[in-house]
Image 1 (cartoon, rainbow, N blue to C red):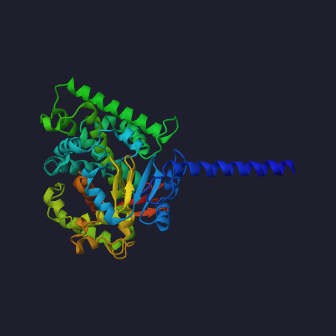
Image 2 (cartoon, rainbow, N blue to C red; image 1 turned 180 degrees about the horizontal axis):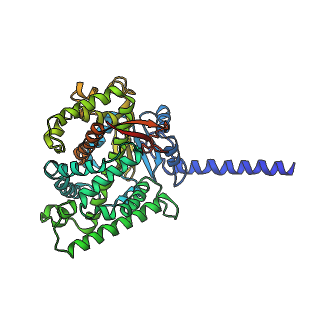
Image 3 (cartoon, helix red, strand yellow; image 1 turned 135 degrees about the vertical axis):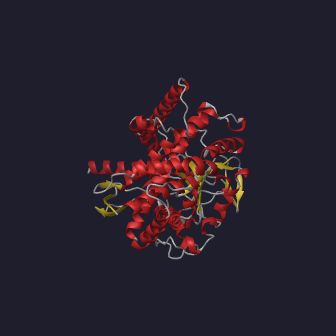
Length: 465
């Protein structure tokens, strides 16, 4: 009996502490005008639920509290908006106190000077310097010709091999981006640099707890080592009389005072270019291959488009900008892949002052999570939204620019690397589908939150076409 009494008291005590902690967080963030919602545990909030349950967590909260509700995720009190009109307003009104609001882990690991974290005149300067490297002029005249050469090299000798498509797409995205940044040194540093960069990427979406063994700690160490490698390359270049023709050379030789970068800004810009061109491009490419494999009619349409381009060229003749501009169905495949796979789930903003929107108060310092995932499955915008249908982007010419297409962000924060990313994926698909056919093996599952990934890989046998 004494044991039972002790056990009962223990259970009651634990239950009391549990509910007290939850109540404490609710009381801490109680304020007039806030939307309804729950705040979870002190410090951790509802981050674990957010990661574990993903879209299910969002839909349940939406059903309980409506399209706008409060939570505590990724280390910050947060207003979550699933309202399309409100989301559009937030993305288009940075000047009204709604600046980028990266999680602390992302800021620490990608750097406080990266283009996604700065605002105002600093954002204009960083964006301007970036567009010198990846804007339309550089893309047409410099990046595309090199990309064509490097993509052909990357895709050599796959015939008869069993590959992990996920890993190959990651390797491709990183290889192409690194070649563009440091063309000559890329081969010698590739393995060591990529190992550190992989740590960095994982740490960008983690709880900011800097203890050995945590993703955050590994990510932060990865960042330090990546910067060390970058600065060693810069020192070697400055000690040499040899000239280079790549992004790093352009950054170091820039003489336009409007876009001059200090060492920290330079490091963060290189990391941002690599990160943007790594995760989004690799994931979209993997999912495009997956969807094309599962939809033979779309694959044949894509092949027809690319073989028509090859028919106009001699063997080995590279793809040029005019060829790329004819890849209309390829572009449609890329947009449909991003929509259906939801490669980007949402965007974070931060209130620089108390703001009232539609009768809801957003306190200064709170984050706003513009959750755009469900918009991608709105049947009013996309009939039969769960169906892979690239043709919808050809039939409705306005889909790419309609008010609620946030695949590449929105407003002044429209992704500056949008066209570079589409070109990279298009070039990969061009040489892949005209050179090979493939069949999946293993039937591995795809996880779509918080990142789109195949936890056990996505394996396929590849044969010459």
